[in-house]
Length: 240
Image 1 (cartoon, rainbow, N blue to C red):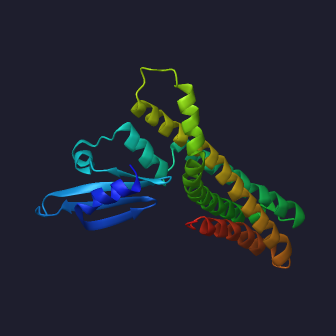
Image 2: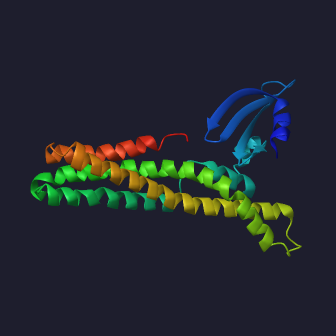
Image 3: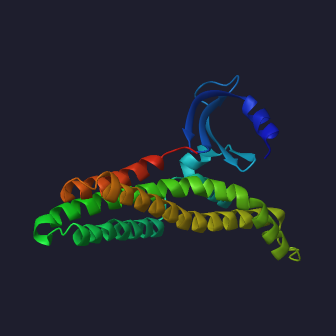
Protein backbone atom coordinates (compact mmCIF):
# COMPACT_ATOMS: atom_id res chain seq x y z
CA UNK A 1 0.00 0.00 0.00
CA UNK A 2 1.54 3.32 -1.07
CA UNK A 3 1.40 6.60 0.79
CA UNK A 4 -1.41 8.12 -1.31
CA UNK A 5 -3.66 5.13 -0.84
CA UNK A 6 -3.03 5.14 2.90
CA UNK A 7 -3.75 8.85 3.17
CA UNK A 8 -7.02 8.45 1.28
CA UNK A 9 -8.11 5.65 3.57
CA UNK A 10 -7.13 7.56 6.68
CA UNK A 11 -9.08 10.57 5.43
CA UNK A 12 -12.31 8.59 5.85
CA UNK A 13 -11.72 8.40 9.59
CA UNK A 14 -11.82 10.86 12.44
CA UNK A 15 -8.84 10.37 14.72
CA UNK A 16 -9.61 9.91 18.38
CA UNK A 17 -6.24 8.85 19.71
CA UNK A 18 -2.72 8.32 18.38
CA UNK A 19 -0.26 6.00 20.12
CA UNK A 20 3.19 6.39 18.60
CA UNK A 21 5.38 3.31 19.01
CA UNK A 22 8.64 3.29 17.06
CA UNK A 23 7.74 3.64 13.36
CA UNK A 24 4.26 2.23 13.98
CA UNK A 25 1.25 4.41 14.75
CA UNK A 26 -1.57 2.74 16.63
CA UNK A 27 -4.75 4.70 16.02
CA UNK A 28 -8.14 4.45 17.66
CA UNK A 29 -10.67 5.79 15.16
CA UNK A 30 -14.36 6.08 14.43
CA UNK A 31 -15.81 6.61 10.96
CA UNK A 32 -17.39 9.96 10.20
CA UNK A 33 -21.13 9.91 10.61
CA UNK A 34 -21.06 6.92 12.94
CA UNK A 35 -21.50 6.95 16.71
CA UNK A 36 -18.43 6.96 18.91
CA UNK A 37 -19.33 3.46 20.02
CA UNK A 38 -18.31 2.22 16.55
CA UNK A 39 -14.64 2.39 17.39
CA UNK A 40 -12.09 0.69 15.21
CA UNK A 41 -8.40 0.43 15.99
CA UNK A 42 -5.96 0.71 13.13
CA UNK A 43 -2.24 0.30 12.82
CA UNK A 44 -0.12 2.22 10.33
CA UNK A 45 3.39 0.83 9.93
CA UNK A 46 6.12 2.47 7.88
CA UNK A 47 7.99 -0.24 5.99
CA UNK A 48 10.78 1.26 3.95
CA UNK A 49 9.21 3.83 1.65
CA UNK A 50 5.73 2.37 2.06
CA UNK A 51 3.04 2.60 4.70
CA UNK A 52 1.00 -0.46 5.59
CA UNK A 53 -2.49 -0.06 7.03
CA UNK A 54 -4.00 -2.83 9.16
CA UNK A 55 -7.70 -2.11 9.74
CA UNK A 56 -8.32 -5.37 11.59
CA UNK A 57 -7.60 -4.50 15.19
CA UNK A 58 -11.23 -5.07 16.20
CA UNK A 59 -10.75 -8.66 15.00
CA UNK A 60 -7.40 -8.87 16.74
CA UNK A 61 -8.93 -7.80 20.05
CA UNK A 62 -11.63 -10.45 19.90
CA UNK A 63 -9.70 -13.31 18.33
CA UNK A 64 -6.13 -12.42 19.23
CA UNK A 65 -4.87 -13.59 15.82
CA UNK A 66 -2.72 -11.89 13.19
CA UNK A 67 -1.95 -12.86 9.64
CA UNK A 68 1.60 -13.95 8.89
CA UNK A 69 2.28 -10.70 7.06
CA UNK A 70 1.02 -8.62 9.98
CA UNK A 71 3.07 -10.62 12.48
CA UNK A 72 6.28 -10.18 10.50
CA UNK A 73 5.75 -6.46 9.93
CA UNK A 74 4.90 -5.74 13.54
CA UNK A 75 7.69 -7.93 14.93
CA UNK A 76 10.15 -6.15 12.66
CA UNK A 77 9.50 -2.90 14.49
CA UNK A 78 8.90 -4.20 17.97
CA UNK A 79 11.54 -3.19 20.54
CA UNK A 80 11.22 -6.54 22.27
CA UNK A 81 13.82 -9.22 21.58
CA UNK A 82 13.59 -12.99 21.57
CA UNK A 83 14.72 -15.04 24.55
CA UNK A 84 17.71 -16.31 22.57
CA UNK A 85 18.84 -12.79 21.69
CA UNK A 86 18.35 -11.57 25.25
CA UNK A 87 20.45 -14.44 26.63
CA UNK A 88 23.11 -13.71 24.03
CA UNK A 89 23.15 -10.03 25.02
CA UNK A 90 23.44 -10.85 28.74
CA UNK A 91 26.27 -13.34 28.17
CA UNK A 92 28.21 -10.87 26.05
CA UNK A 93 27.62 -8.02 28.50
CA UNK A 94 28.78 -10.12 31.44
CA UNK A 95 32.02 -11.08 29.71
CA UNK A 96 32.73 -7.50 28.64
CA UNK A 97 31.94 -6.22 32.14
CA UNK A 98 34.16 -8.73 33.94
CA UNK A 99 37.16 -8.40 31.60
CA UNK A 100 38.17 -4.86 32.74
CA UNK A 101 38.17 -6.00 36.37
CA UNK A 102 41.24 -8.11 35.63
CA UNK A 103 43.02 -4.95 34.49
CA UNK A 104 42.30 -3.27 37.81
CA UNK A 105 43.40 -6.39 39.65
CA UNK A 106 46.72 -6.46 37.81
CA UNK A 107 47.48 -2.75 37.34
CA UNK A 108 46.20 -1.35 40.64
CA UNK A 109 47.02 -4.44 42.70
CA UNK A 110 43.51 -4.64 44.19
CA UNK A 111 43.11 -7.41 46.75
CA UNK A 112 40.32 -9.90 46.13
CA UNK A 113 39.28 -10.08 49.79
CA UNK A 114 38.86 -6.29 49.99
CA UNK A 115 37.44 -5.59 46.54
CA UNK A 116 35.17 -8.48 45.55
CA UNK A 117 31.98 -6.69 46.64
CA UNK A 118 32.82 -3.69 44.48
CA UNK A 119 33.69 -6.00 41.59
CA UNK A 120 30.36 -7.80 41.81
CA UNK A 121 28.36 -4.58 42.02
CA UNK A 122 30.15 -3.00 39.07
CA UNK A 123 29.91 -6.17 36.98
CA UNK A 124 26.17 -6.63 37.59
CA UNK A 125 25.34 -2.98 37.00
CA UNK A 126 27.44 -2.86 33.85
CA UNK A 127 25.93 -6.12 32.56
CA UNK A 128 22.42 -4.76 32.89
CA UNK A 129 23.25 -1.42 31.27
CA UNK A 130 25.16 -2.97 28.37
CA UNK A 131 22.34 -5.44 27.73
CA UNK A 132 19.87 -2.57 27.65
CA UNK A 133 22.15 -0.66 25.27
CA UNK A 134 22.47 -3.68 22.97
CA UNK A 135 18.70 -4.11 22.80
CA UNK A 136 18.14 -0.45 22.00
CA UNK A 137 20.90 -0.44 19.41
CA UNK A 138 19.54 -3.58 17.80
CA UNK A 139 16.11 -2.03 17.43
CA UNK A 140 17.53 1.03 15.70
CA UNK A 141 19.80 -0.98 13.43
CA UNK A 142 17.13 -3.50 12.50
CA UNK A 143 14.86 -0.85 11.02
CA UNK A 144 17.75 0.57 8.98
CA UNK A 145 18.88 -2.86 7.77
CA UNK A 146 15.37 -3.85 6.67
CA UNK A 147 15.17 -0.68 4.61
CA UNK A 148 18.58 -1.19 2.99
CA UNK A 149 18.36 -4.96 2.46
CA UNK A 150 14.76 -4.94 1.25
CA UNK A 151 15.39 -4.62 -2.52
CA UNK A 152 18.14 -7.26 -2.46
CA UNK A 153 15.92 -9.72 -0.58
CA UNK A 154 13.06 -9.10 -3.02
CA UNK A 155 15.36 -9.92 -5.93
CA UNK A 156 16.58 -13.04 -4.13
CA UNK A 157 13.05 -14.34 -3.51
CA UNK A 158 11.86 -13.50 -7.03
CA UNK A 159 14.83 -15.31 -8.55
CA UNK A 160 14.43 -18.31 -6.26
CA UNK A 161 10.73 -18.83 -7.01
CA UNK A 162 10.63 -17.45 -10.55
CA UNK A 163 9.78 -20.87 -12.02
CA UNK A 164 7.30 -21.85 -9.33
CA UNK A 165 3.95 -21.28 -11.02
CA UNK A 166 1.97 -22.62 -8.07
CA UNK A 167 3.16 -19.88 -5.71
CA UNK A 168 1.05 -16.74 -5.70
CA UNK A 169 2.44 -13.21 -5.47
CA UNK A 170 1.09 -12.93 -1.93
CA UNK A 171 3.03 -16.02 -0.86
CA UNK A 172 6.18 -14.59 -2.43
CA UNK A 173 5.67 -11.34 -0.57
CA UNK A 174 5.24 -13.23 2.70
CA UNK A 175 8.43 -15.20 2.11
CA UNK A 176 10.25 -11.97 1.30
CA UNK A 177 9.01 -10.40 4.54
CA UNK A 178 10.15 -13.40 6.56
CA UNK A 179 13.54 -13.32 4.86
CA UNK A 180 13.95 -9.58 5.45
CA UNK A 181 13.13 -10.02 9.12
CA UNK A 182 15.52 -12.97 9.42
CA UNK A 183 18.43 -11.14 7.76
CA UNK A 184 17.83 -7.92 9.67
CA UNK A 185 17.52 -9.72 13.00
CA UNK A 186 20.85 -11.55 12.61
CA UNK A 187 22.79 -8.56 11.30
CA UNK A 188 21.38 -6.12 13.84
CA UNK A 189 22.22 -8.50 16.71
CA UNK A 190 25.90 -8.78 15.82
CA UNK A 191 26.28 -5.14 14.84
CA UNK A 192 24.66 -3.92 18.05
CA UNK A 193 27.07 -6.04 20.11
CA UNK A 194 30.04 -4.76 18.11
CA UNK A 195 29.02 -1.09 18.48
CA UNK A 196 28.18 -1.45 22.16
CA UNK A 197 31.38 -3.28 23.07
CA UNK A 198 33.60 -0.94 21.09
CA UNK A 199 32.10 2.21 22.61
CA UNK A 200 32.08 0.80 26.14
CA UNK A 201 35.70 -0.38 26.09
CA UNK A 202 36.92 2.85 24.49
CA UNK A 203 35.22 5.10 27.04
CA UNK A 204 36.21 2.83 29.95
CA UNK A 205 39.90 2.83 29.03
CA UNK A 206 39.96 6.61 28.63
CA UNK A 207 38.27 7.11 32.01
CA UNK A 208 40.24 4.46 33.92
CA UNK A 209 43.75 5.18 32.73
CA UNK A 210 43.66 8.85 31.76
CA UNK A 211 40.89 10.98 33.27
CA UNK A 212 40.61 9.04 36.55
CA UNK A 213 44.17 7.74 36.76
CA UNK A 214 44.83 9.54 40.07
CA UNK A 215 41.56 8.51 41.72
CA UNK A 216 41.49 5.74 44.32
CA UNK A 217 41.23 2.31 42.60
CA UNK A 218 37.82 1.47 44.12
CA UNK A 219 36.18 4.69 42.92
CA UNK A 220 38.10 4.53 39.65
CA UNK A 221 36.65 1.07 38.96
CA UNK A 222 33.09 2.05 39.81
CA UNK A 223 33.14 5.31 37.87
CA UNK A 224 34.93 3.96 34.82
CA UNK A 225 33.01 0.69 34.39
CA UNK A 226 29.52 1.65 35.56
CA UNK A 227 29.86 5.18 34.21
CA UNK A 228 30.93 3.96 30.78
CA UNK A 229 28.10 1.43 30.65
CA UNK A 230 25.62 4.11 31.71
CA UNK A 231 26.85 6.46 28.99
CA UNK A 232 26.57 3.74 26.36
CA UNK A 233 23.03 2.91 27.50
CA UNK A 234 22.08 6.59 27.41
CA UNK A 235 23.46 7.06 23.89
CA UNK A 236 21.57 3.97 22.69
CA UNK A 237 18.26 5.71 23.41
CA UNK A 238 18.90 8.22 20.61
CA UNK A 239 16.29 8.15 17.89
CA UNK A 240 18.74 8.32 15.01
